[in-house]
Amino acid sequence: MKTRRELKNEVKETFKGHWGQAIKVAIIPIIFQIIIIMLGILAVMILSIIVAEYSDSISNGISSVDTSNKFGHGNVFGNSAGGIIATMILTGISFTFLDWLRTKNADFSALKGAFSVFTKRNFLGILVLYILTNIFIFLWTLLLIVPGIIKSFAYSQTYFVYKDMSQSKNADDFNFLDYITKSRELMVGHKFEFFVLKLSFIGWDMVAILTLGLGYIWVTPYKLATYAAYYKSLAANSDIISDNQQNDDDEKKSVIVEY
Image (tube, rainbow, N blue to C red; front, side):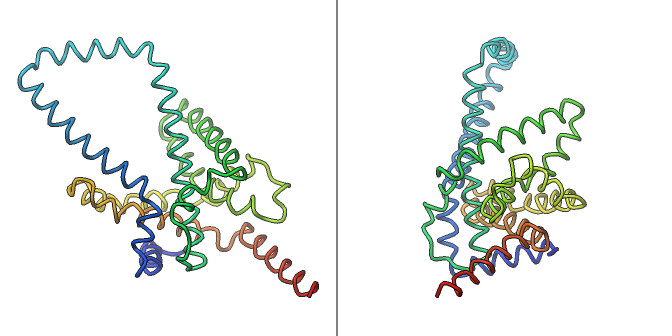
């Protein structure tokens, strides 16, 4: 298993001379992150003015907002739909970065890569996995917050596992629970390690925020590609890669026989 430094160096080496392509692949979440930062700053400014001038009215306003949320079913649906779409896009970007790290080939369509999950082959699979993992994490969270967090890390590689296993020769032998189970198995002994990897980007996130979100132009592709590199390293010696390698070898042999 590669160290954090090795993973990040691998990404930087892969992106060397191709940062423009990396940014184009991740342009959608980059734009949203910049917008969120800008709106956050604007909200803080407005809130500060309101608090300064109408501190008494604020407390009354909060209680009225709380009661109005009793009928917020539309917001719940909107948030769920937004979460699904965001997951689809981020997964497509992550898949693209994983392929790039494996092939070292930057000659591909960035836009097509970002929307690679929105296909007949992948859309339903990712949607089902999104629903299942969120249900499982929610149920674990009902016990205590910490088990829910731990399980979120255990299931963190599910989409990558799905990508590899669903493309294998034995894909028909697997179901959606198998992908989740395989992620959980891969993360045994690695959950805290992955947590620390995520934690290592806090400094970069702070820089991005201080630059009014513009830093995310570089931070977002760097971060997503590093997570893809982590899975690549994690799965390197697993049966996932072994099976796929065997499939590739079989295909090559069949081509030789045909010709």
